[in-house]
Length: 312
Length: 252
Image (cartoon, rainbow over all chains, first blue to last red):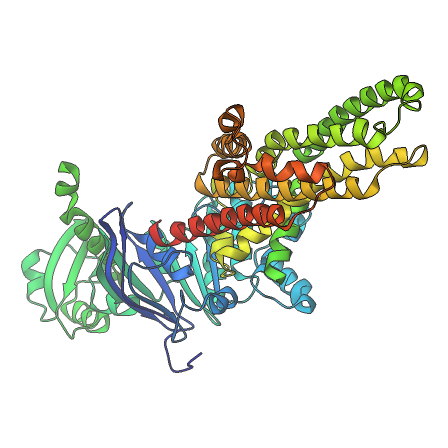
């Protein structure tokens, strides 16, 4: 493994099925310690991309490299360094959670002497302790998902690939999953696909939006926030013209009583806007980043081809 | 090797954690025991008369070999049932991605599945062999011939198991996999039936038949050509299964 190489690198990968491109010319890189959120509508190619990242599916073109090594040409390396949770958790209903995780640990090449500790750690991380001797066929959807997650990280892989990990979890479990993913990102590179934008905002460092198999948008979330719109709640009623007198404001849109959505000019920040509002005496009640910026981008990309799709 | 053993052990453990394998073993054993007892009863009735006939047939000819020959027909039906879940079941239960993403290689997965299924089938053969073997306490058996027949049956079981695995890799529907394995196994067993009716018994079509290569084992003849034939069928079927897994990776 080349230490200077990104943990995961997709180099112009493509995947064709029956002559149709499912994924096309997709390039991405991810460092250890980063969480990448893969967004896209159904059929955008997210699951296919994740399968290629996991080494389960060979790309028709391009390369998936893990630590600089071609994943498909080095299956033994993938075995030890990739953890994959498919959309449907791959559970053997005849085994208990403990037996299943032991099998997964051995399957991924964990040494016999380290298996017990690895399984214990995975059980603890995914909060499966009380259910450890329960058959996986008897588990609820949420627990099945957690066991699936445990098998993806039992061998402490460099890359963890999660296909809709929050699917089937209740709100409390989903919040804990976010914490777990954040904790995992300290030592691993994590890629996850989801439809839930709040999950991406809460636990991802970067986001990539796929549409019709192509990468349509890729950004670091902190940059998205910095350059995005702000939501402002004021004490006083003012009009558009009043906003346009503030030099930092590019566009103002009323979204409720004394509530505004403000697009900042390039190089202007939230601090500049707050100071200008106070100087103008408008009475600032609340100022926060508009998380809908990601949603707007996502909806815009999805809507671009919605009509042709419907016609097809 | 450890990956093959791991997949095989996991399959054996899962098989015997379900009632299906136990019921299959119990019903097959009951059926064979019934046949064995009928043959034994018939043998005991004619045994006093046989003593007076020079070079007469013994318990091996009249009990053991007919039982094992009957088992060879039963395996045609039994093996597809034992193998239908191996890969098709994994695909239906969405567990195949776990094996494919583990990077252990398609051939290792297939070999692990083959060994896992073969253990159950071999158990049936060995249980069947134990029945006539018990007669050794009361009469003299032709043990060499019995060993040859057992070896032949195990080779047949291996070939049918490999065909079953290949069919299970071909489709995601276990019932369809079982039906396909049954048809292919039966076709291979009966492929030269028409030729034999016409008196042809030494042509290529005879060589292709499973029965042609199994029959000598029942007479105590262990020929390398017959062993090679069964190993060839087994190898080709397993390679097809591995190729099919590869196409799942490359063609989706």
